[in-house]
Image (cartoon, rainbow, N blue to C red; front, side, top):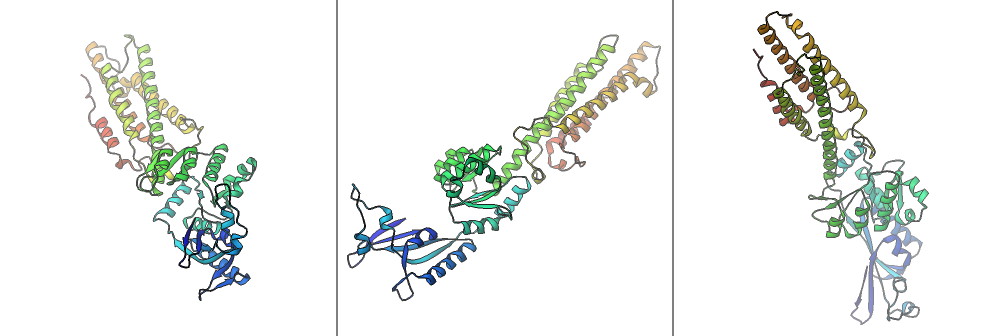
Length: 435
């Protein structure tokens, strides 16, 4: 960026600011303490490079300020005007005089390092795309935990010029993309998507629009973000905090788990109810099910619908970040879910059918010749089967709270008041034995 001003002696002076490593190559002299121009020899270059590197390693963004005098003979003699009577940038931005290097400290926001660690713990790889040079980008990435030994740092133009095969090979190991343009960010996102990655991009500026639009999920900033970035994104972070992305990941996994818990409980409960109803009706002389219509209605409303909804309301917790993300092609029903459904349905069917066919012997009633007594005993057995089925579903709902192999099925159970209320209703209000 530059501006032209007129000095008190009537001459024009061009002031420029920009990347040190680019503009310093066009410098021929520098301003010294005594405000006298001196030739920019080797010692000056070494001093300038050392100052730039020191600022970059201290996580300080720096910009260099130069000036040039277009009126000077070495400018006016070579400058060429185009058809619009304008001089090109390259003709003006040369033979510069270095004024100074300005360092701007841009500290990390509180909680960024912790958020990056949580993302990595959850199997989410964090990559940084920045317009800063390699040294500054490395310093920032190291400080917040993005850059690690073995990772790759590359400049945007270099990455852009790679072949597609080279991009695909290096993209998984690329951790920092320095001096990157909006197009470089979009190319990186496209490359990661080509190798099967689910890509999320954060940005707040207009130049982040292409990458936000290309990503699977785009996060824009609600406070500092531009309207272009917000329109191109899918999610707007209202607090402009990177840590909010961790919450989004956590709640996304919570919703996915809630659907799976709901389905696992629904399938195991309905399979058991259908088998019991069918077998008992076929084996009955009167062709009637062991479960009455009212009991089936209770099971369907209280133990089936409400209990499944209670499972779906489990709150999100940090433990959800202690596992790798599911693949995009992962089935809704996992192997563990099939095992749980098979085991739960099998043991519930066995228990309830044993109570149905051997309930009289278990209760010690035996076969009664009195019709009234026999009917009364059958009603008690029917109530026993119903209560056994209900309690089996209560235990099943607790087991369905975990989709992994961990044994602590009661972890965080007190945080879900809906689940506690449904369980309390299911255990406190059961039909008394019929007589």
